[in-house]
Image (cartoon, rainbow over all chains, first blue to last red; front, side):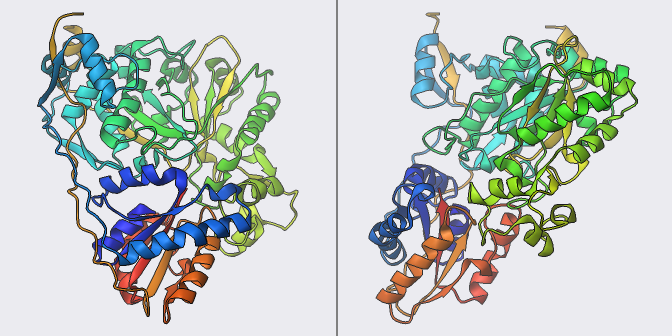
Length: 466
Length: 102
């Protein structure tokens, strides 16, 4: 909404942005990042989702319209910005406790103790990349701050990472800065969280946990790199709760998922990174935003026919409002993650299923009634309005794949992804337990993005010398 | 724990400097107002209410509806934004209303 207003103002056309009452603070900080700190807002009292028509009307005619007229016809006071420190400026000197208090007071910490980012500690991180510290990796919305090798190192220090994680951290920020991912959506109200997946020999070298408790904190690379991600979102992209981060509930960071490549190699399956186009055996990070997760406990059966109905049911059951990323808001951007324990992956592979076969089978079996899809898309959420068009109508208009509109029967079964490849499958977790996990996806608001991890010359020696 | 250390900050400078807003209009009378919408949060209903009220207060005001532009959120977002300056000019728009931030 505000990006539209900024474009209009830049074109010399005055604007007024309509904003529900609870989102005025977010709008003001977002506007600052867009370079228009005084971009005028017209308040819509309360939140429109729960208002009767007469309440909506009273709010719009009593408040919004007057704000709008004022915004378009009266001079708007400019808001001055305070100057920023330089990247290498010393901003504070004190004890460990004092530094932590200073960081919390300035909103640069997540509330846990940080490792003080001294010049020496930052340099130790820089020693693990052959890159210019001032190299710009991208510009991150909403704050419009530059992502640099330098501030990757600083945030790596404060997150409690080890210096040798630096090449992984840089790859993550390159992924974050890729417009394909859509970092600017990271403060939206569902409060979805990014899941990082790491592949390649670097995971073993750095000691990632790939087995039992794969998503549990307690393993330094998995945990601290997960923490780094959210600190970087806060400090450089600018996603601060009560400001640009409007997750209604939110959640803490996700521990990094490292695939069990020993198990993958044993059964001849590709890794997640390979499925997304990276060369076999290469080091890579994959990021994607998921709205939640659930364990698929005790998957029981010694053949695909016995196991797949349960896995497909989990995909359907845990896909709810996210169907708008299948058809409606951003077609074909729903890429849920199915995590298989090695035990289940091995049983499926032993039965002759490749990963592609498994995706195809799940695509054919994971179907929901069109009526439920339409309720989630329009009637229950109003997320795809436009006259409450159903799947049949959207298909007829060319706005949905044909599979979704084969008839008008509300009980017909439709897919929950647009194509089999949209189901991302990873393998990790306890190798001797039959549990799996499903994560519904946030679609275009955190689209799956993969980046290679570039190691410096003499990487093994550098790590070995520690 | 009592050792003193000097630390740097974890952010970086903003790449955008604050820019001035466009000149405001003397009045909305006789002006052409466009509504751009993200297809969310009842913006269509609100726009109808706003149009009726503005028309009653400002003679000669006219409107360009949201369906002239496409959704400003979702798969068309980047295209709609890229085309916007040219489209606003072609449609002779005097002011823009954008919604919904909810």
